[in-house]
Image 1 (tube, rainbow, N blue to C red):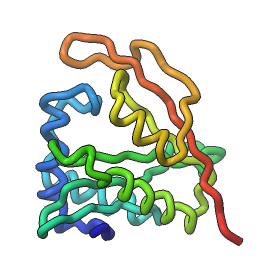
Image 2 (image 1 turned 90 degrees about the vertical axis):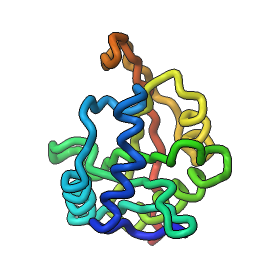
Image 3 (image 1 turned 45 degrees about the horizontal axis):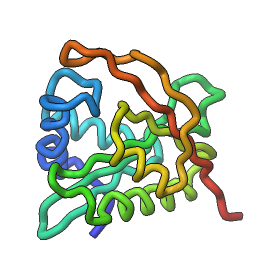
Image 4 (image 1 turned 30 degrees about the vertical axis):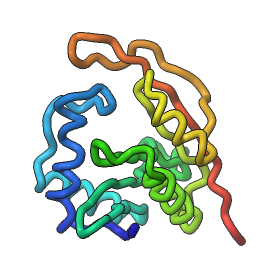
Length: 165
């Protein structure tokens, strides 16, 4: 089941996300996110009229995805940056595809014109998921992140959001 997230999901979302912070270069955050901060992040996205979704199985959050403003400058108003995470061990079952499909459908009802996603590379699973839902790679920024004493490249991916009407 995919539904809108709420601040009540902050504990589960933080528990899903923080292993990525501690153990991977997939996120560039160094410090774990508190439940309070995660709840504030959820509200901030939703207060901007953008979707933050969770995928739930057997009452457990197994994934989340959201879209946030890409940049604060006025000309970027119609561009969003998408983010998706699945609980470790949950990939390869179609959850990411279903969650991303719903996120992109929800974005059609917003002013968003373009969705961007930034992927620390190499990450074949994430690149494959993004390509499967219509993103295309538009460039790679070399050595723009540093975590765990190594430099990390970031691929930029882009997808048009088609509006009905």
